[in-house]
Image (cartoon, rainbow over all chains, first blue to last red; front, side, top):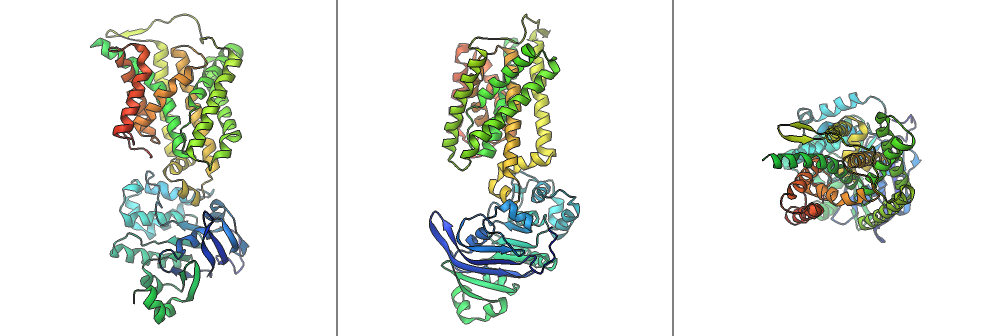
Length: 242
Length: 286
């Protein structure tokens, strides 16, 4: 969406970020890098600050220290509506659709900042998630959990982002849908969109992630390729359920 | 039977006016998350702006309406920019109290400018149309038709335009609207414009149906809130349904109790609703 040609396009780098809620730091100096076009997973126990990292990157949390760079630009402290214009979109874990709006209207809202014709993008989203096309006139709040997740991801794709942040895309879904969503995420990545996601289903996520970060207590614990993390004895025992 | 039908007709007229107010209250609650207590005074203001249009500027009738609506819209946006904007992150109760303060200021200003006495748009009486023994005055017919027209226009706005859809989206989920890149301040701006238009229209209709005085809107505030709560606050169609119900019940109550108790009837319905089904008929927001 921006006329950026540098190699940094779509590259995210969070440097030693500190921050949290109400004076209590949840993040104690985490650093995360997503190279253009990569799938990167963040895993770790509850309370490690996984979702908080996403919020911090997306400008939903005031940082106390540290910086966030995207597209080679310092975006620390940018508001979300400014960040989406840089080509980064975010799908929250919960309440990630507009329930009383139709599926179609939800997608339109994803394209709110676009002044141009976005019908091509719309077709692409419907192609990616065929069930949505039949339900385009239905209120999103009446869909199943899996279909709602499709709407949520579809909405975030409407700006044709370079990087997509997904907070627990498989949460609350049945195993069948989990596989489907993971397949779609890889398909989206094949279109050239970088993915940074937080996942509870750590093993499954690392299988198709280029790299992964293991966080504990708001700090980096391990950072390696997905395959290496899966092979790492210590990681396997502590974080992947043996 | 004729008497009941007659009262229902009067109830629909009153209900149309209440509905227009209740839609605004509901919209503001959905998007800004607070109960706007100055809404009644927005109505009064609209009514007096129309009086200026009629009496001072001698505008033709067709222009009085847009003039008063635009003026009320400007005032509403001005008040938001100079007062409410600084309290966006405050708790709803602080917003509510500041709107009570705004209400008092507006009412006093109106009284200073236009005086405390009753006023009317035009002198003289009109003969009602009669149909099967039922009477309706031409003005009342205009009120109902005008209200229906405004509701249809609003429906089209909310469902066909980008800004209208964004308003519904923001009312659904403020945080998601923000992360989608929706410019929430612009949505708030249009919310005030739309709410003030409807309030001004309601005020003018009330002035046509009865008389103008500085507390006309304040006195209608209770039925308006009762209607919004009855319908489910935050719900557009609920507000219409709630407004009509409150209007009709208020008029029907005059068969049993003195008309002076009409607001008490609205109050009773509101309290009852809050006890039995706080989310309202159409299931609004908490």
